[in-house]
Length: 415
Image 1 (cartoon, rainbow, N blue to C red):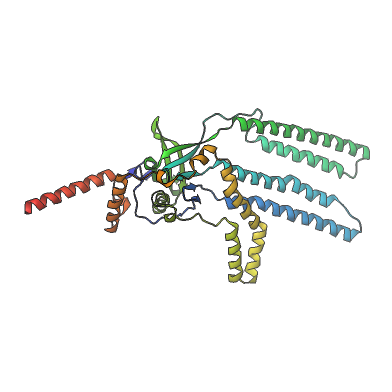
Image 2 (tube, rainbow, N blue to C red; image 1 turned 90 degrees about the vertical axis):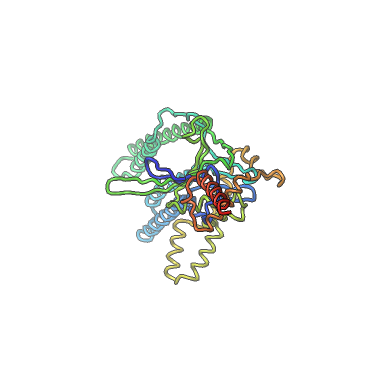
């Protein structure tokens, strides 16, 4: 069924999950895990986040190599060893590259935990949709979006002050020692205050943060639709097409209790993506594509072996330099750990119990009405009709019954 909205147009795929006649293709790599009993949908390019964080590890190594090279060169040229270049570049690592690399790494872990998967259980014919409780999070005193940056800059300035005091050449030893003492005292106080504040804040945050819960809903009643929107700006018009799965709010049917969306790019891609989900629930895991293996270590090794065969020496060396700079080998290991372990670690125990396999005699069965609709639609698709041309299922079914009555009436008249 099509419907026009204020921002674009909408193609409804439910509440009856009938066949669309499209080929099941995981266009947007939404399928993350698949077993005999359940299917996980989870969006996000986890590999890119891991590579971006590990890029700072490569920068750290390069800066350290530069510091060692400068020190060795100074020693060879002047026959004396100085620690100033090494200390300066080492300080850059400790204050810039390493902190930012760790920040990006833990930010990636946080993103994985806060975007839990949608799980579909074909044996129960139910969908588990994640949502966060609406509890108000704890508002920490003296903390806002700029506080962390201000604290970081204050530490850098204090460390810069201490370093400049140590390297002063025209000051007396007593004056230099006084500056260094007060600088180190200030730095120690800042570190103590910030670390104590962060420790207490993390403990309180875990206690008061919204909790992850899963809403269980029947598959046959799940709301699914493809919405195409046009965003018009100054000199630019962009079209966005999104596939959405939602559980309606019983108190407000126009809103969702829980929902998940993915940008599919085009309506046809959205139908192919929806058909992956529908095929799994109706026909089993064999009818649904397997999760993409682009983020696995085995796929990366296979790509490297193929590149060695296909590329000449210079392009292959350029690829190896890029692989090292982004630490792609290690990035694939971290990504696999996030997919197989970290993303599942934070799931509630109730979901794990709900996902346990059932004896086959206890499996839920599709309704006879749904099976009949699918058979009629399959014959319609064989005649060249399209799902997007069928209109609402109720009207199509009513029209079909009316045509059958007319045919029977004409037959009796001719007789």
